[in-house]
Length: 334
Image 1: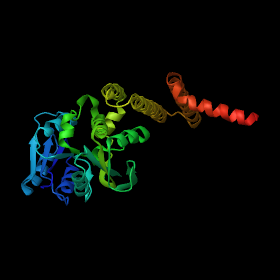
Image 2: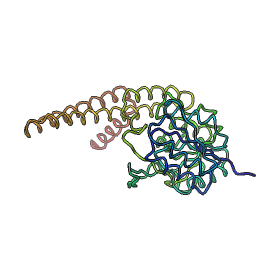
Image 3: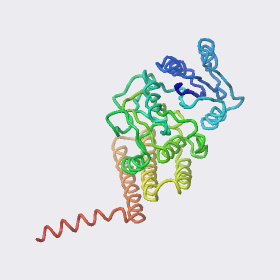
Image 4: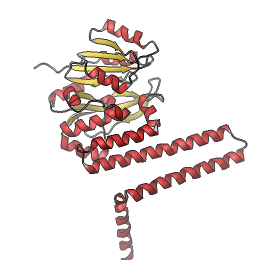
């Protein structure tokens, strides 16, 4: 039986600084991909020149170009129509995979052909490629494993999604059958489809950090995270799409967590902005101290207001606190 074919797609927009490192890590994997298709999304830097070097050197690397910038999700979906592999890896032009990533993931997928995807852990690197002492993801198992759909549902409810976009190799048919990357979900599109595939087909998991995620302030994910209107819209769209696929309890828990995270980030953003204004308009050390105190009071007040809102609206989730309190009081009286 022939080994399955792996296609690699890589959208790129103005990542000339990183794309050579990203492509080099892909083409030198011990498991050679069947094809690597890079789509330049209207870059204005010298990305195309760098990509062309790899096209000239490796027979399985191709370059296509968008006449105008389409964005990450549209470009990825365009690339899906061009590949012919059994499995597909969506590589980011500013990240990089580590040695053994393709081989270990594909070996496990061959062993469990029913799985819809395989994911690993990740490491965090800075803009210059320096490793930070941070490992991303949840170690669900200590060995390479297949997690069947029912276990995946339980794990998602208990821990949230452990599947990182840059660590994931998809079964192509599963990705296509479930709509690919839905554009209106913005940077959450990969996380959504990963969770859908996990509960429908089951997934493979390799408990090793086999890719590096480069955190850039102006990167797509971080930029989307700072746009609170887009995040609120995304939460609504994901909630609607989850209905009929995930249990109601999971949808409710996911929505509450995302809303809380959004409000927390909004508060931190307001606080940083106000403190920045104070620094610019400082008229003396005493007034600076007073103004910082006022900003902190506003921050605390907003936080307590949001907390009160969630307790009133989702009070049933706080019943356990009440039960513990009364049990303690009863024990105290006895």
